[in-house]
Length: 294
Image 1 (cartoon, rainbow, N blue to C red):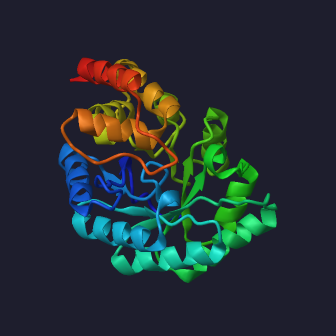
Image 2 (image 1 turned 135 degrees about the horizontal axis):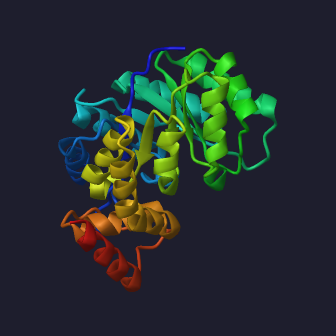
């Protein structure tokens, strides 16, 4: 397996829209630059937070290309290329690579329940179509597909450039097993915000989080303390962030992160329907949480 290339806090971007629901690429630039200037270690556009599943192919392409251009090599960029079909995922993966993405992330999604052989073949098709690394993304809550540790390792063995795993099931034991069964050689990343502290203790290489749009400095402080073995400091940092981490997870990432950016004075528009903006009670609660963190 390769040496670790991407470590630390991977910030997940939102996709801004204007008042007419059209892409606002200038606002996208602003949100990306905010996170890079705050010190995140990588950027990941077009995931669940980025509403990738709600974009047309033209919009997806525009956001992918603009994101890579704006990042301009300052940090690694991992573009989510997930699509309902294998052909669509391959098309997006090739596009992301052509734009200059450091890696791509693949979440298998399906209307029909997929068999394990079909999931493996999906990753093989994407992996063989491109030359950049692939991050396997496991999140049954949004994809309907729950990949066991056995299946994940089968895919890693079958596809040379599947070299990273984002584990978002909320099951810390899976992270322990990923570490133990690969002797710590397979980079894996926490994708469940409330498990951040435990994930680092389990050997996570980094933390994929939309919270970096709002509290990147806190996210980085937790990572650094955990990496350096400063447990008391890491615990204090985590508990400081936990109310926000819980709120954005339970409230829905696009609507809560967009509301948080609006509160911070960064207008990014509403989520795309059928997802509705955060209601007034939610905004008040979010504003109060953010105030305690500033």
